[in-house]
Length: 136
Image (tube, rainbow, N blue to C red):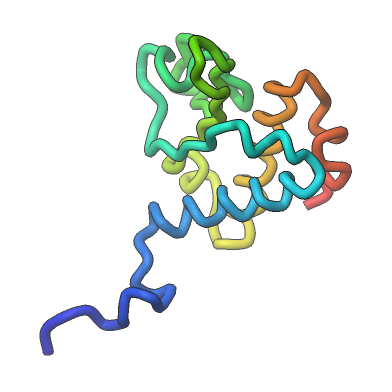
């Protein structure tokens, strides 16, 4: 038998990257109900952060620092709006996947990282962005 096991519209056919991007999108949609200004922020998923700590991840938040080491790998980061470009929140897929075992645990960590990065961009605490932050 040749061909895909399941048709493309079935979740089984979704790649790990697509499934992860869906988790990020679900988290963003959850927050947009409370914070409509999030529609003006770009949310990106990258596989891993750059080794030099520059680029899309500059201004990092969770487990982060510019010039990170092996012990501290960022899970996400932010880039402020400038030169007519919108602000960005970046979530790093592989570091999040490595720290989680199943879909529910991964979804909870993705949401936590998104909340923390949005809080950093808005200059708020994570608990203000999502009152249920830290309860999962």
